[in-house]
Image 1 (cartoon, rainbow, N blue to C red):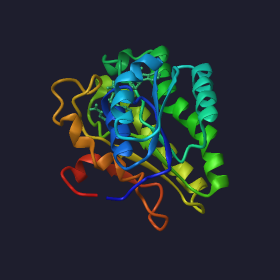
Image 2 (tube, rainbow, N blue to C red; image 1 turned 90 degrees about the horizontal axis):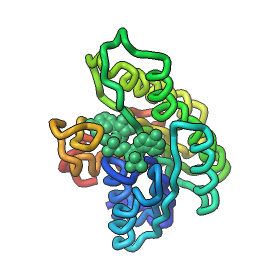
Image 3 (tube, helix red, strand yellow; image 1 turned 120 degrees about the horizontal axis):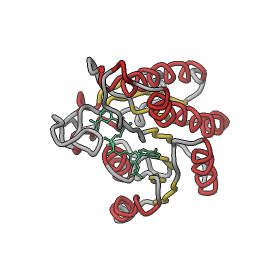
Length: 232
Ligand SMILES: NC(=O)c1ccc[n+]([C@@H]2O[C@H](COP(=O)([O-])OP(=O)(O)OC[C@H]3O[C@@H](n4cnc5c(N)ncnc54)[C@H](OP(=O)(O)O)[C@@H]3O)[C@@H](O)[C@H]2O)c1
């Protein structure tokens, strides 16, 4: 099993759902983890689980729907230390309505959390990775298709894919691999109880972009379900 001992990862939205599972997978490989939720108390359960694995675990809190919230997260993380792995997992899909009824506010809310804040976190941490000569940035996308009632969500994820490719090109001459990944349709608060995959199925796939080697390509898109049941 490839290890990540001594590295420090920030996993946004790791209070529950897919982010909590990713944090668990990282800790199982010896990676220290900074958990994030809107409130520190939301990460307590995940924190307890990870501490039992013998890695260092920290929590930061903050809203990704405002620039102020993003800046607060960045300040808390910088006080902890250098981030080797930025796992942009937090996201929301809270609007379900006919495509022609989408308002400016609907678009703004989804794009702010799923896209703009993600780019600001990359702005905050990628330059230090570049200076150090190493980093892994993972942006969580989606395989959503043909769901016009969720158009703002699906467009936000298409934007994540495109942003990832542009950022990877910017960093292509360094050992910073920037990837996007579709977890699959997963039973979480966001995915709902009818989703086709259990939460456990996101591992080990969600770790693939973190485990890339220097000679591997950057700017790749992955699907976590392709690695279901495999040893990595
Ligand atoms: N579940 C699926 O089927 C599925 C499919 C494709 C892609 N995805 C993507 O996978 C990622 C994780 O989804 P999930 O299903 O695990 O979702 P989830 O269970 O609803 O968890 C969402 C996480 O994001 C955080 N979050 C939500 N809104 C936030 C905000 N405004 N500011 C700061 N943090 C916020 C939450 O923090 P709090 O606990 O503090 O609220 C929580 O940790 C998302 O990017 C999602 O789009 C999910």
